[in-house]
Amino acid sequence: MKLAGALAAALLLLYAAGAQAGDWPTFGHDPERTGWARGEDTLNAHDVARLTLLWSVRLRNRPVSLTALTAPLVASHVTTAQGVKTLVYVAGSSGHVFAVDASTGRSIWSVTFARVAPPRYPGTWLCPDGLNATPTIDRRAGLIYVLASDGRLYGLDLGTGRIRWGPIQFVPAYSKDWSLNLIHGVVYTTTSQGCADTPSGIYGIDVRRSAHPLTRKLLVDGLEAGIWGRGGVTAGGRGLIYAATGDGETNPAAGQYASSVIAVRTSEMTVDDYYTPRDHRMLNRLDQDLGASSPAWLASATHHLLAVGGKGGTLYLLNADRLGGADHETPVQTLRLSNDERAYEENGIWGGFASWRDREGGAWLYVPVWGPISKDAPTFHFDHGPDPDGSLMAFKVQYFPRPELEAEWVSRNFNRPEPPVVTNGVVFGLATGENPQQTLGAAVVTARGHYGKRQLTTRERMENTTHAVLYALDARTGKKLYSSGNAITGWVHFSGLAVADGRIYLVDHDSRLYCFGLGK
Image (cartoon, rainbow, N blue to C red; front, side, top):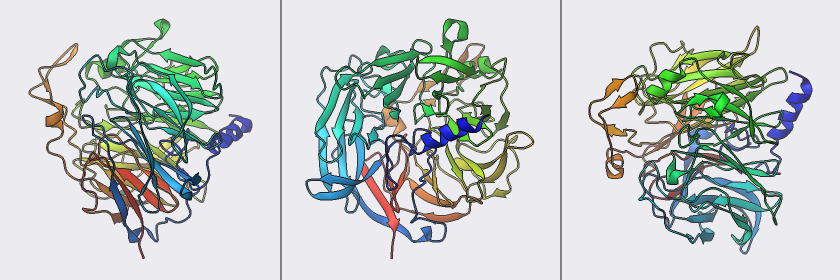
């Protein structure tokens, strides 16, 4: 590809929202969802063994089914009534937003959204009727955008919580929405699971138009083909965003893009390109869709690459400029990582990825994998022991003679890993302690799919959990550098980590926010 395209991608990596070095302004740190804290200069492989729990605070939020608090966000040098501070922001499932002092955990402000109407259906763990999307921060405007459970988008002042933008109806009320992404003045989210009878797709709203914001959407397949990767859409180059879709009908001529990766041109909100695995009918039948994770954007001066994976346990490396080639079915590389059982729960690739460039310019990809490693997985240079519940896997990108992912290391056991984050040669991973089981009973597999299993209730899914554990691993070898042990008391469902100014932030299902940093 031309150097100009790489430069454009590099400029986007500076994140146009004007974030500062000590910030973590959106899920995965940036619009490309890299999970890479580029400006972090305190945490490193030599010092992370001194990590300790600095503070934790339980916020006044009622968990709704399995959801509680969104992944944390961080903004530094924010002017508040108490002075200039670094603030940590989380939204709560029962309709709250909290801003706390990063130094102490003390509350600076909180906001509670009033519902305009009750939900039509009772909530479940698939459709909890609560706030689910991680907000996003706009430093230039001094706002944090939050999507309430009734589908209205708010722009709150970073320092006071005062409503300065909206609210504007953005998506249908009580739809299941995923992390907001701010790209060139447009806020995006995705919908899934058909909650509140909402079609699956991508929604965008131009927040630069405060008086008359323009809202557009791209629907992919009725109530199916949900886009439920933790990060929602991933920003790329050439005015494109990328998303992976779930089960459903696959017929591009009719605008149906199930079990696929789509490139969407933001100027028109139309599908510019797509990739569909050749075995997509089997993936649909066994409920092993690609929609479980947001794609990873991997750009260099010579190549634009995209990595994606889903419940089926296969990692796909794609040419981001020509997804799937001429037939839309040809990836650059496929790697079988997990789920030899072909199960639709407890196994596979969930949530999202992290990517990083080392000091020598080498590009790395970090993958959270649920369940034991596949017998067909590549051989890793470093293997850190049995991993029956899951692991983090690291790959180095090789560009010549052709692009491919080289297996570097597989971590110790993670009882199920969240999307990792990385900085200064350290990968931070969270073992959630969640019970990943979704159904009970014997399954009967027919030509049309799985039958015979009973879906677990919310109460049943909250049983057999254990506390989460934060790990720090050497980014090049996977060696364990730190473990939080019993410091985290609760388990975690579908959240994420944030790293800023020498500290790591996370949440648990008890609506507790944790801050880890270097001890003396």
